[in-house]
Amino acid sequence: MSPAPREKPVWVPPGGPGGVERPSPVIFEVLGEEGVFELLADVYRRFDGTPIRHLFPPDLLAASERSAAFFVQLLGGPPLFNERHGPPRMRARHIPFEIDERARSVWLDCFEGAVEASAAAGVFPREEVAGFVAFLRGFSAWMVNVAPETDGV
Ligand code: HEM
Image (cartoon, rainbow, N blue to C red):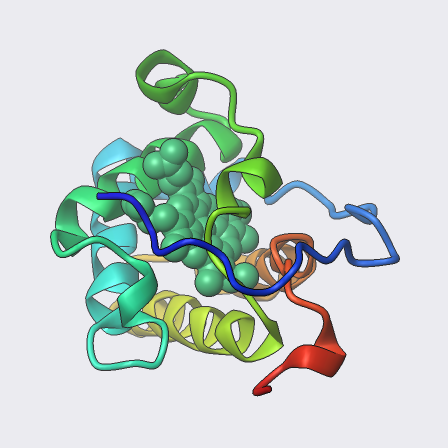
C-alpha cells in the first residue's frame, strides 16, 4: 500500500542522526529471533486505535515483521532486514510518511509500553530496559521529518 502524498515539506532535524549508542547484545541473547518478533508484534498491536494508526498498512502484523527483521539485525542477530528488504536507510524509508514530534511520542509510548510489559512478564531483561529505551528515544528523533513549527497546522 502506498502512503498518501506528503503535504508538508521534508524537515531535517538540525542535530543530525546524533551519536546514538547501539543497544546491548544481551537483549538478543535473551530474546532470540522469536522473542524480537513477538515484541514487535506487540508494539504494532499497540498502534491500533492511536493517532498514528493511519500511517501504517492495514495488516499490522505483516508490518511488524519488517520492523522485527530490522531489530533482529540491529541487536546483533542475523542480517534479516538486509536479506529481505535491502539496506536499512531508515530515515529515507520514513520520508514518504509525515512524522512529527507528536507521532514520535505516540510511537515511543507504544514501544516503551511493549518493552515494559515484556520486562514485567520476565521476558525482556529488566537491566537492559533503560539503555534500550534511550536508544529508541535517540534514534526516533532522526525519523522526524515535519518541522516543529508546522505541527498541528
Ligand atoms: C519516530 C516515530 C516513528 C514512526 C511514526 C514510524 C512510522 C513508520 C511507518 C509509517 C512505517 C511504514 C509502515 C509500512 O508500510 O510497513 C515504518 C516502517 C518502519 N519503521 Fe518506523 N517509525 C518511527 C520510528 C522508527 C524507528 C526509530 C525505527 C528503528 C529504530 C523504525 C523502524 C522501522 C522499520 C524497520 C520499518 C520497515 C521499513 C520497511 O518495510 O522497509 N521506525 N515506520
